[in-house]
Image 1 (cartoon, helix red, strand yellow):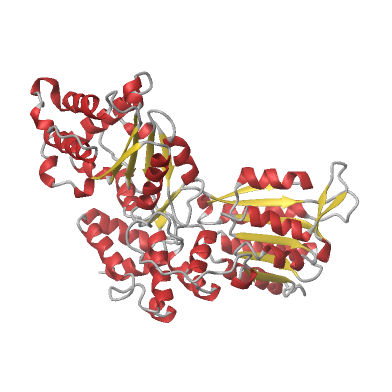
Image 2: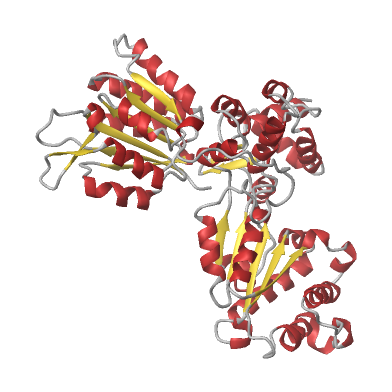
Length: 535
């Protein structure tokens, strides 16, 4: 799982009053180290920041939270440094414009500087949450606020709760500056482009090409588009269930078609069970489906010769009908729900070896270099196999996870929802793409009120009931998983399980991984499974 990066920036020019920024950053880092969720965060600190440093740092680090500690100059801007170490102003509107350009992925900006409310208001046009100071703030109050704020944020609290706890810590220490910090939220009125009334789309299935409700997944989309343009490409698209694999997959194929490639898409979930009986039947089905998509009249069974084995016959079919010289265009094959073959060990080992062999052969064989593969799956396989026969350690890995806070806000705006409606939903389900889409659709369509959704959320008659019962049924098929999940939802700390158990829970989308174990993915799952598995 990608860590949420917190970028700490400071500037204390030589010709300004000295600030205790090192002490403040040390306290923030200690908050992270003490947190039970410390493995989910990464802290990067940059001192003596100059005007010329801002853009490169933000571009290279791609933070979720940006924290600035230094001097403010009210409406004039924030004080950074020049090459000589003296002060240089970063103008308010220029700062706001910088965050407009780089806003994707930044969830929160903290301006721990005197009189920085002006800059906070400008930046809040583009970032979900911005914290500033409405007057001068002393070192002690600034440090205590940072301790309270990040202590809560690193424990998974919302920005609003963390902000309140930061102010509360100032008050608890009897420091008369508890009302100095201010929290600003991005509002519709502050958007540069007016909202458009769109026809609301139902949240089931892949988001269609051209939909205004599609939220781009960056940088995964760019990585996949770059990879699919290369000869003998092999893209491994992995994410838990219902995280947006299909929506990204259709866009990768659309990009491939734009580049002039032939494309086809197989969903192994739709393959009849009888074709998994042996490798010959499976590969005959595989060849027939792909051949049909490209108008091949020949039946794979007509020329299937047992002497050459299933893999050899499949290769012969591809070379004769799909990769021949009649069409020089690359052939892109997307295989969705690849993990279905993990239930059939004999097929898995041979088929994975076949895919890996095609990828390797494409490096030196012009014919096979035209083949490009996109493999989409939810969990890893733990079948023992030769690493040289596996496609899961080569190619381009693309991992999808939840929406960021920024992406949740973008989708909410497209549905015409307010910030006050977003916060309770986000606290319950985080950025789970499908659950967020489901909640926003029902709110925007008027099918359910916010109160109705929240009150019945963790019940089987609530909005998320079908989703929850489906996951419960999968868990209950494995008695071991039932016990594991029961212990997990009742634990305040991460728990480490064996690799196979972790993979199963991850494939269902029920957990988040950390370096010290796993935790339940969101509060909705915790409440529901605590209730269902209590006996």
